Length: 348
Image (cartoon, rainbow, N blue to C red):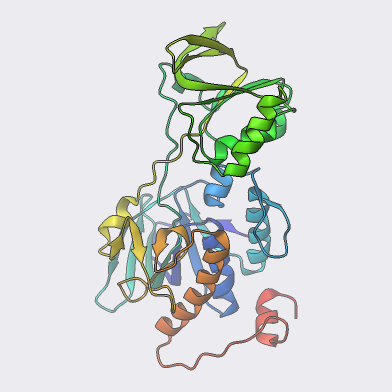
């Protein structure tokens, strides 16, 4: 079982993991297989990263042995996988200080004043801290998380309702296609004819439009229509200048994120296009003892896939072990046959 911990005293640990998304959670697993204890830090109030925060119901099809898996389901499975290790989590706080101490260990401090003395730091911070791009019409903030949304947490609650979806990327198209035929009405609004989404998703959306399950409009959000303190509709100015009133119980805006490295950019680690440069042997950064896995890192041939992040976490764990115990011979053991690993997993 995971624990959410807040402690004002300095915590001594072998590893601090910055980021509790899928890669950070799997990093806990790989480290504990090697007998290494880690603490996780995340700016969000719950583990799961973007999967939980932005698209918990979105299906994922490229996780080995799982033909289809919801994003939140994946997070829940990862939490179940590390449950035997009692991973210590420090949630709702961001790392603000990271530097190498005189003895070669690392000083880590968060916005809540939690301080660590760590032998290794592994950064699994995704794209860094992020905020969704807002819809940008007057008064929208009043209805955020009530009738105006930047993510979908429980898709079923919007079935049978009038929905307006803005955006031309994968998230917008995925939800337009998902809601088609389930909602009372779906209007898809995008500002131009070109889309950033996968061509197959665009083609599926156009099929829904042709069948009358979705209405498509090119234009921009102009203003809100409020009646009895509730959002009743949203006005959209089309590209020809005409104004369209779109009845709406709920409005979804998928304009992407504002990814920011935040304090990470000030830690002296070599960067390339706002990502941390790492080697491909152990995914170590330019500072020995600091590793980076997942979307936060870059190297030749980098692919931003959860699958790739899991591979990186496995090799980073061995890199961390070597850094913590230099000169000690490393042995590759298998969970199917190793009594030591099975004991750590609680299955012996």
